[in-house]
Length: 119
Image 1 (cartoon, rainbow, N blue to C red):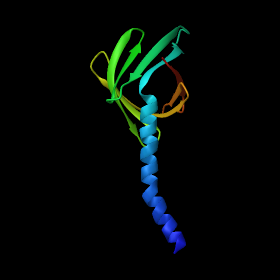
Image 2 (cartoon, rainbow, N blue to C red):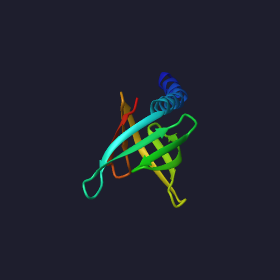
Image 3 (spheres, one colour):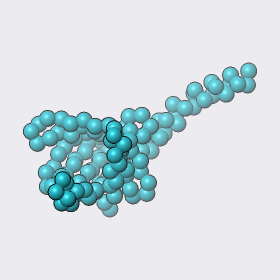
């Protein structure tokens, strides 16, 4: 009977814990982030990303501003949809981890991208 009670307690408590993790990640992501990358010619460029509390976002790459939306799905995955200059939409799901002022995003290939928070 004790084992059954523990299983029931775990089933009841786990959704709340997952929701808390999701809310915490959302709070951590809100703000402005910057990454420096290299293109194929090894020329460095910046990517600026702002995650807004209302679920909207803006990405700036090489002076081009791209609007979009974002949301947390699962415990640690951020799903984004960016509108490209030609009007098409690009969707992505990335695993997100925030440590202090560093945001690490991993795409489906496992390739990590690190951003620093802009203060």
